Amino acid sequence: MSNRASDKEKEALEKYLLQFLNIEKQFPLLPGITDRNAIAGLMGIETEELTKLRNHFADSAKDAALELLKEDDITDWLDDLPFKKDDTIVALGDSSTDDLQGWFEIFKNLLNITIEGADFIFINAGIANNTTSEALRRMHRDVLAHEPDWVIVSLGTFDTIRPRFMPKRTLLPLSETWENLATIGDAIKTVTDNPPIWISPQPVIPGLLDEMELFDFDINEKDLSQIRQILLGKAGYIVDPLGKRMGNPPEAWYYLSDGINPSLSGHVNTVRELIKTLATAEEKDGTMASVDFDPEE
Image (cartoon, one colour):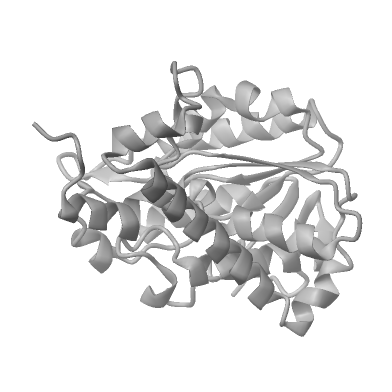
């Protein structure tokens, strides 16, 4: 029996799955995990194919950063970022962070390209489909052990999934999400005096999610809105607190075919909001949001 991926499986890898299949991060202690030939074999493709696809996503992230630099607001905001050029910056998140062409990869390129003498250490601690509980469980290994200067947190979406066999409940109760995020915030304080940076969950497009064979759950905007309400009470920077960066209502152009994960254009929106918030934030009761944020909107 062949271990090679079929044409249909290869198409799924290229168009959707591979950018989230960062197995090395999910199983760092697995024997042979640093062997790219072994990783390619697990996916049923040749090593050269794996390298080519991963390089494609990396190039896309860099190109997106270069396009952002054509915007006057971005270049102005970059001058006002709170980072030092040798800071260690960790992103703790789920699929949108783990994405090989995701917001953190674009953000990394943006800073490395524009900051003179940049000597940043960037650590992508995103793992696809993680809930706040799963992220908290690995926080010491993946975040605190690196003694970061800054931690960006992008979590909560997968806490709110409602299994189709039990749609009356979310995967995690809201009280557990609240406790997890509070603990994550407290843990960040043990390694840095800089405030956490919280990125709110983007909305989903239910119609697209319904058509996705890989998923047997739903995500409701009402549940996501409750996560955003929790973040509004956090000390630190709050990026896109109302969850409108993908449009209001959200536009399908900014999403992959699942209606959950952002497309490259959607990730660009997140980076734009992140840079804007960091550069223009005003503090109120320990919470920092962009100057044009109006909680009554």
